[in-house]
Length: 199
Image (cartoon, rainbow, N blue to C red):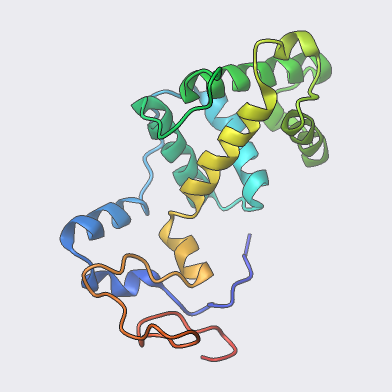
């Protein structure tokens, strides 16, 4: 899938020599995926591949694989910045939600989520987002809306931390130690992305 961008010639990685070594290592690692999971099963990973692709409207394999591996590491770490009262830990919420999703798809359609047509997948995701997915007995122990919001948050965080997405949205990457010089509205430093109609 080719994504439209105002910055078709911009590559944030061209400026990596300006970053400190630690930052450069972290960002470069995001360009390489391994396909190994700490927490996710193969079925869960393939379900997330479709789910995340639909959420971000992007089916580019290397980017979505990075998103899945980022989710896997986040769920495995057990670290959470916040959690609403009454909700289970993120890893429990996501894995129980994925299990309920798989069970419901097989009960209703005798297929796994990733085998369904996009239209059906989107119907299911929409129902989950409003807490109306069926069969209700499958979802009775899973807070559907919280499950949907958690996956939306984790997916968005991962997707927009990928350097290729940075380039497409014109984000210049880490500013340290280079910093910004031109601070007035409408002014850009020489190293910042220029929209295609200004390039």
